[in-house]
Length: 554
Image (cartoon, rainbow, N blue to C red; front, side, top):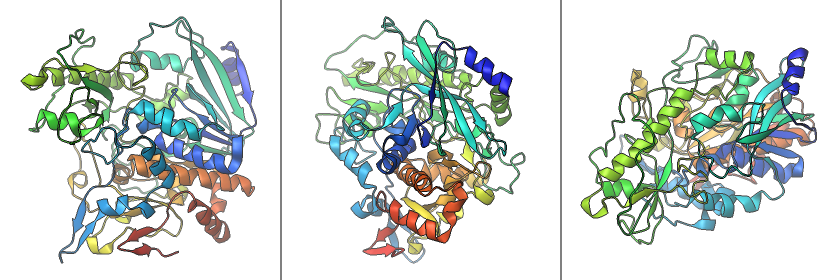
């Protein structure tokens, strides 16, 4: 181990030791943003966030999905009793106040049909997020390469990361991420970037807030991947790692006043064909669905200069290959020193081809009045990239932790009948969530019957146990990497839920540090847990208000 560590150091031109972070958040997700904003309120500038791009916020920013999804359904039981989950979810007392405040900064500039608040990704980053991050230590354009643990093998003691800086005269750099990603994880300077190795050490806790679950693999922590609902504690015999949810590479389109020429598609058609379709819906509905900027006062009316996010089933959804390598191959990459996020680069390339192809198909199939008037938005001020695709792919799932005592949050804790009002009240509840089980199925997978079943998802609670890992004592997991089953992930993966459980996870980590706790498990002491929950409530609700009554009334 020591010899490998020296070789790792010697292959870069610059190394920086960072030993004054009490909490390291490995970020890139909306949950990581929530965590850093809450933890920093309690720990000042002793919180460090490692962000793989130059826009923090995940779904809301770098993944170009700034039209957040809220629950919008009503449940009816056999007696006719109705529970309007959508209305309950949007009640002010049930919403995370900071997330609501950030959404209100820009307002509903797109008047889209999918969300009550649709705004431009770049402006969400610059106007809504950045004012809250002035005192934070965010290491932008930084990816993790290696994790070191102590002799017990249960505690993370240092993290090796690579920070890249684009070469100044590289004004014409325009590589797709599938081409550029290996460069992010290389220690060597390239014609595109100069690199600095950052070694984070002397911290107390780590939060896994990445969109890709990289800490779980690099720390050799137990995790699950893909389809899985039943779990007996044995990782090897459960589920199907190669089948899960489609991922999407989002982009922006704009409607011009007059027909506008575009260069031909620079990418080949994806393997197996794009299979693009409007699924029988009007083109105009697809256009306004995730619109983020418009002069129209009607959510159904197309207007000149409209700007929309493209994130479509049978459009730029890609599901021919899993985004991640197999768990075995990911661990092999880790062990032989070629870690690149554990990403299947062929899948990433296929997603890019699917996305660009969808733009050209959608443009070609526009109604006559809009012929040749839709164009890619590839301005760096709006998308942050010169090719127009998002900085990061939008993932609907990630590698998922296995919690303390093999805990996984399962479907029975969030499913029920309308008269049940809410899901299971965990004694260690930390935040709220509400959304249906939403699965975008991959094309070549044979899904078990429980995936195709309809579930009645109630307003639910997320426990502290879901934010733990059974193997690492100083690790919290948030967002899509929480200890949860495939079905539960399909309901917790949306923007508001991610942000809230990130906020709760940030508070939990800060509380552990402030109280000199050595292990996450110590938080389950009754006295600590009550104090922690009282602190969490100052950041995000932990009880549902339904028909004027709080559940539980604490």
